[in-house]
Image (cartoon, rainbow, N blue to C red; front, top):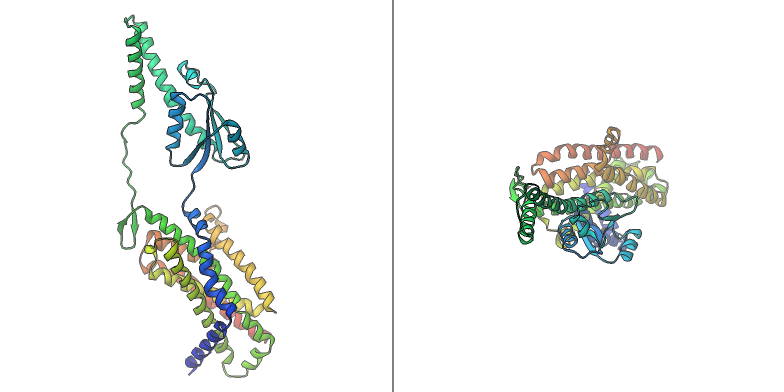
Length: 408
């Protein structure tokens, strides 16, 4: 009888909430649109951009062009060739990380073994990639300079030992020595490194699996923020009932208070779960290849929604007006998201920070999602996050009941 009444009340709540066009838009239209609009952000998170650098070649020699070509082949940088004035302006504006400037006598200085200040590197003082770019350029310059030094040394040895050689043979010998030294820069690997990615089921998958998994984690991060806020937003009717005295009248019926508000929480949980599912479907269809999604991951999202519902119910009981609830909702969503999402990746910096992160439901959703997507595929991974998320829901629902009983 109680269960039947609770279900009927939950259905009634669903009908009331869905009768508002505003609620329909906020629940089922805005979240998918937000995911689509966030597509570029998601791809930016999962696809790191190359470091933009500019190269100014005043020499236009074989050596300077060879070094420019080798640097441009590095997958971590994106090279732009331009004139010096424009290049310096790009650095000042932050459009380029650094500028490599080859002077007009670059090749001649290398041939004369004058290796000081061969390349000028321009960058802002706060650039964190300037050292990497400097080492990359210096490595390529020293590669060619070493070849020249070795070739010159071979000719010097010929002359020191009195071996006769004409200019034509000397030039050929110098070239052979240069090429021989160049080959020493590309030896065969002494250690073989093989990288594999595994999908659920321990079956090998293409390297793109890692990228798709990161994209799904980014989608879940957005869903976690939306779910927390919408859970609190939908509890506005609880505040209105308190202010209208409905809560006091409900308490006159046996167990009516618990059944009424528990049915409201069920309705809220169903709606935000549907919103999360619709958002994931939208992301799967338009943003990434969804082979990483699984029923275990869906269960984790449902448990996270349950914990958000418990927290929202408690906040509704301590709020005096719907405006106050919405303000608290924005504050709590921002605070828990910062701790549970951003600080989750920084918890290794301090043990105290790691402890704080464990009290936020977002961290358990992200942790469980990353484990499921990248490392595991069994339901065992869900045990600890499930226990914590259910405990959070029960704890805050009990606290909300206590506070509601006292206030009403």
